[in-house]
Structures are given as C-alpha cells and as structure tokens.
Image (cartoon, rainbow, N blue to C red; front, top):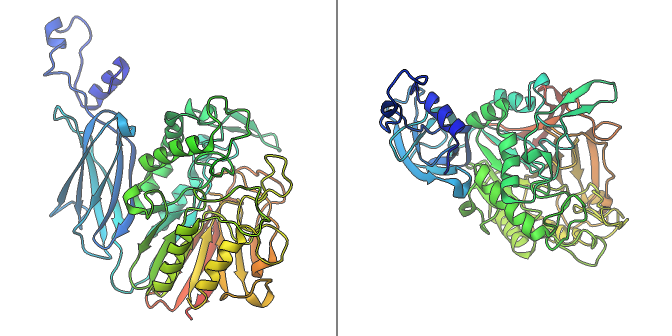
Length: 515
C-alpha cells in the first residue's frame, strides 16, 4: 500500500518516533530506516458479530498492510489471555480483516483486544472490546434491533453529538443487536448544510464518498467508512455483538436483480447486478460478517442462541422479482431455495422462540413508483386485501407449511417508523396459518416517515404505531428515531418487546406468552 508523506509522518508520530526539525541531525541520521518505521493504526474501531457457543467473529481495519492479532480473556486485565493470529490485511479488502475466535466457554462475556503488526514488526495501539458467546443452557436474553442509518440527507452532525442513537444502544448492554438493513445509504449523498422547517441549520460532516451516489467499489466502501467514523458507532460496535443483514440502500433505493437504475445521477454504471455485486463486497468487508456463515455465501443464515432462541436472518433483496410484478398470480421475495431453507429451519427448530429478521415488512404496503408504475411494489404486501398475489404467494406457502410451529416473531425496519403488528387468520383473506407478531422499528438515524397503508391479506392489525405526520422528519431530536428491545426471561416463559425512541424512552410494550 503506497503511503503519502503526510500519512507517513502522522504514522511515525503515532508510533512515538520523533523526526527532528531540519538541521538538528545529520541527513543520514534522519533517513535511517532504523529510526523511521510506519506504525499501523486501527482506523475505525473494532466489532464483533455472529456469535457461537465458543466464540465470535472479530472485525478490524488497518491504515497500512499489517497482520491482525486478537487476544481474548475472561478477565478485563487479560489474565490467561488466548492469542489468535489472523490474516494480513491489505488494500485488496480495503484494509479490513476478520478473525473467528474459538475455544471459549458458552454464555460468557469475553474481553478482547485487537493489535496490528506490520511486516517490519511495528505494532498498533490495541483497542479493546467485549462480546458474549452464545449460551448452551437456558438463561435471560436481551436483543436490540433497528435499521436505516444516515439516510435522506441526515449524516453525522457533530452539534447534536453525531449518531447519538448508537450511544443509547451501547448503554443498553444487550446480548445482541440485529441490524435490520440499510446499514448505509450508498445512494444518499450529503450536503454540508440543510435548513430545517423551523429555520435551524443541520450541518453534516461530508466526505468525498458521501458527496455523490456510490457507483464504484471504493465509493461503496467509503459509505461504510463514513458511518463507522462516528465515535458513538465505534463505542457501540466494540461492546455489542451484531447480527447484520442488508437491504436496498446498501446498493440503491428499491433495487431488484436485473434492474437498470432510472436515477440520472448514475452516469457511470446503471446495472443493478453490477452495482449490487460491488455493494455486497463492500458490505462483507466493512461489517462483522463473513460469507462462509451464509447458506448461499451471501447474507441469509441461522444463528442458534441456546435452547431458548433461534434467529433466522433473511435476504429479501438478492432473489426478489421485479417490483412491477406485484399482482401476478405468483412471485417471490426470498426465492425458492431460501424459502425452503426458512420453512425447513422453522419446522426443525427445537428452540422455544424463533425470531425471523426480515429486512422488508410483511403486511405494510411499500410502493415503488420509480418507473411510473402506479402498481409498483417494493415489499411483500400488494395492497388489495384479497387472496395472495405476487410475492404474497411465497409468504403464504411459508406460513402454511409452518402453521404448526409456535412462538415465531418477525422483526423488521425499512419503513422509518415503529409499530406492533398482529397477524391473525380470523380476520384474514388467507387463513391457513397460525397467528404471529411482527414488530417494526427504525429509523436509527435517518428521515422519519408517516405510517404506511396496511394490507389485510394476512389479517394484520396495527396494535401500535408511532410515526410523524410529515415526511423526512430529521433526527435533530430523538422523538421519531427508534429501536426495539426483545427480552426473553430465563425460563423462556415470556418474550417482552419494547418499542423505544433513541433516548431510551419506552413507547409501547408487548408481552407474549409462550404457547
């Protein structure tokens, strides 16, 4: 990796290597390689993801080529530390790397630190964090979830403390955080200032990558880099183990395979398949995930979290059909292979509770009129309250084939408000399924929007909703910025779901008793 003079001097200073002013040392002394060595730096903090009973996946990034080393311990002072030597991180992965650490006790809080070592033997300052291994015995579980970060022109505003929702999440100290997609808005450029309706001025930190829509691999990478430069984000990521999925804005709004993007801002590449391939690479490089954990080498996967909980993380983006086919006789949102995987997984699960993390909502109508198609639909529900059509047919098959499975709860984001939705065949057009809950939360740091129309095909009843009455309400206050919290008691008797704003205030609570 080439290093500019400025970067070289900054790295040398960070390593504690003083470079005297000109004339104080002989020229040959200043130039001596023994005195001047580049020291690697952990540029964007550290993160953990996808836990197992014996460990988790650890993520980090270096500014220069270096080897990633992770040390772990049950003790904060790193007594009896274990050492894991990871890969050389290089420009090929934008300086990012991952190490799966193993051999730890189940259900434990593990302290970890990451160190980078250059090929010259210089070492970075370490960064420390914690993660929790998955349990193998029953015990209380706490999970937070949300989505939608730096959307609709609302970026890092230092005057309000940056991405302050992540500070609240870090303080919750949950076992897991499910990031429900739209982890970045690669199609959402930022302006330095935005004037609010009340005359106040929102001021964004703006980088080169956030100045235009992302079309190249480096531009997609830059969107992830931007979010992870926030202090709150880094504190959260170091202390909370994540389960991350993607949705549309990691690529561009409402995309589907085979699409040619209509947005005229895309002057260099308009093919969704090309853009999504670049976006997926950047996603895997910059998030604490790895393709080897996914069923298809992409995103969807199952995480078993002890005898009380299985989590199914969906990919409702990579295999969906055209948004113009909402009212066809059949359609797909997951694709045949993923739909079968979910059906089989729910039927075979022995966990008391089953969470399905769906990055698009089920019964909320999400229109897509980008191509002048008044019937264009982005999500599942197509809006006529009748028998299943289009993508609803695939959902109907899944619900029918898992109707004997109990204690299934769906968690989503995407629509930029929070809601508690109950689905019941007694009031549905399609009745071959068992009642279930779907909870919606978000945005975490993006524009908030009014509640959407509901589709009655699966008998949805909106028990609670918290949303603004106008579109794109800024995150200058926490009022319409949301996350959710799931708590399962130690015996698995009750799942409690709180819908919160990002100050931590509980807006609504649902207690679900085990069936």
